[in-house]
Amino acid sequence: MKRRDFINWVGLGWIASSLPVAIAACSSQTTSASKDWQTVGTSAELDKTGQLLAKNSPAGPVLVVGTSKVGNLTAVNPTCTHAGCTVAWKANTKKFACPCHGSEFGIDGKVQKGPATEALKTFVAKIEGNSVVVKAG
Image 1 (spheres, rainbow, N blue to C red):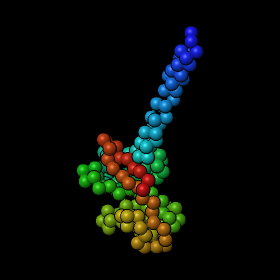
Image 2: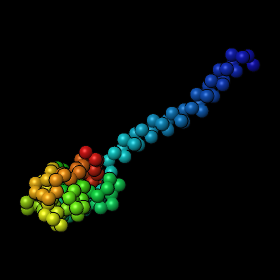
Image 3: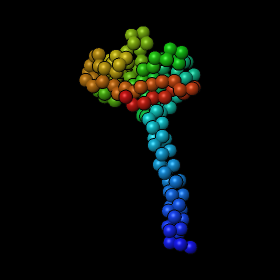
Image 4: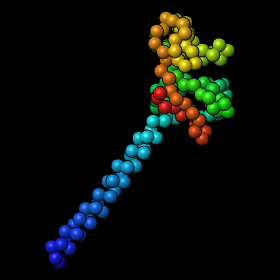
C-alpha cells in the first residue's frame, strides 16, 4: 500500500468515526431548545375550572388561568412574594389574591395591593396538542 493510500484510509476512518459524535451534538441542541417548554397539565384539566395549579411541575409551581378554547392563557408562579403563601385566582375580580395577608396581583402578576411589593413571576403559556405548556418569560 502506498503512503498516500494509507493516509486517505486513515482520514476516511476518522471522518466516519466522528460522524456519530457530530450528529449527537446537533440533536442535543434541538433537544435543549424543546426543554424550554415544560408540560404542566392537560387542556382537559384546565377547561374543568378555568385554572390549572401545578405545584410540582418541571418549571416549578405554576398557576395557569384561561381555557383551551380561548387560547389566551395567563401563567404565574402562585407563590406570594410577601410571605410565600399560595395565591388563588379570583375570576370575578380578575385578580390573584393571597389568603394570608391580603396581597392582590393583576392578571400580569403585578402588585395591585400590598403588603407584597414584588410582582409574581410570569410564564408564557400555550396549548400544544392536549397539553398545557409553559416557558419562563
